[in-house]
Length: 249
Ligand code: 13P
Image 1: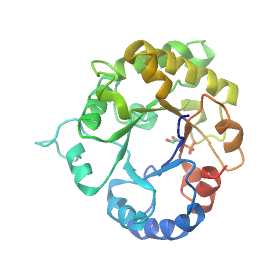
Image 2 (image 1 turned 90 degrees about the horizontal axis):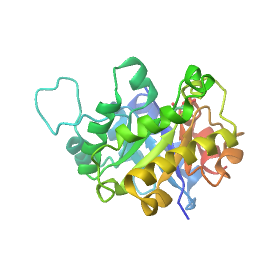
Image 3 (image 1 turned 120 degrees about the vertical axis):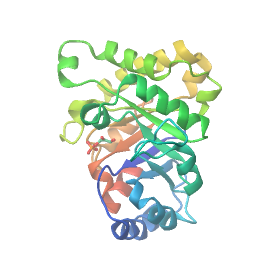
């Protein structure tokens, strides 16, 4: 009943020229694929090329971060209204690489989520434990804390477009994936937390994506899990054939 969202996170990869090449190859491969929603999140510098490249298709364009203020003296930042004006519809918020390398906190994730939702963007809010936390049996606690703080002071009505991505940090770029059972279990924790905050009806509709070394050859076993509502794909989304293979698992 939940339409899957298949999302590409290109991270800091590709030039505008490479973006144009990707879409020329990718669109024919997913033409007529109506089962799932598809979104590609390139770096800001490729957004123009991506929007032009995806024109006439159902592929949506997102980005990988957004600032919480609409404008002002915030050197180097990009605001939600700026993104909307370009035709961007989705934004990744709180990716573990932002948390690890750029000082992202649960509180700034919350501010970004609010700004994205306010502007009408679909935020893909990333949560996930590091290996030490999993090994210490803290996975559920970490997910609950990240969700509660991310969702703080947001109403169910405002949160309607929210998407969550479960990305175990130890599975990102490592070739290790969570087993479908591990992912399903984590997704269930996230869904329960969403039910606490936003209510059961909201939680039943909430899409929770899995991310972490998703490849064409492991996409199917993950995507058939009832709890998994799509994928957030890093490395394997850079190649058109490989991402199309995942989309069409
Ligand atoms: P990989 O697919 O490269 O493991 O990256 C996952 C990810 O971080 C997507 O946001």
